[in-house]
Length: 230
Ligand code: CA
Image (cartoon, rainbow, N blue to C red; front, side, top):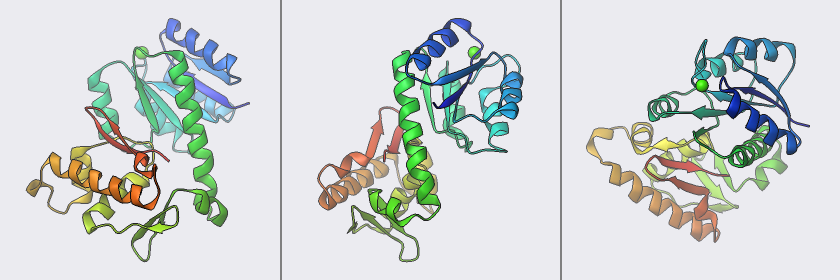
């Protein structure tokens, strides 16, 4: 039974989440403050953390930073305002996903399941298990600086390669067009947001060429940017 640490100071929201996760066979520990959450995490291990950003004693981002000092626990952030969302997207905290309020408890359960699945398939790959690599749709050959999709070599331009590499480094994380420009272009000032869209379109076409349906690996988050969904 996966153990979930839920940190949320609004009792009504917390109650619906504890109930929804409980009926889906998650074991939930709920705390109202960041300090209580960190104390709970010291007492027992958790498989997952759901962190509200606006807590009475510290931000959910701070809780995440402290949790990550000792573990690589997957995190889902709950945000109430666009201003908070900007901070999540702007920081490299290692948070795995976020949901903006109001949300449905079912959406949270679905996200938690997806992230847990992702982190479980990611860990054997990081340990160099060749079987796990073969099952991953995208494989990066670091020394040859090439990316394969379902075993097919992708014929990428230098910028397409770098762009896909940024997304590949953190599957599930949404990157804004500006962030992609910053990370994949040496001179981001010389190009526009449309450049990213054009390159994504081209990469998708090449993914599709490697395997029908593989173009969906790159997903669009409307009004925000792109993410890789493995
Ligand atoms: Ca709150």
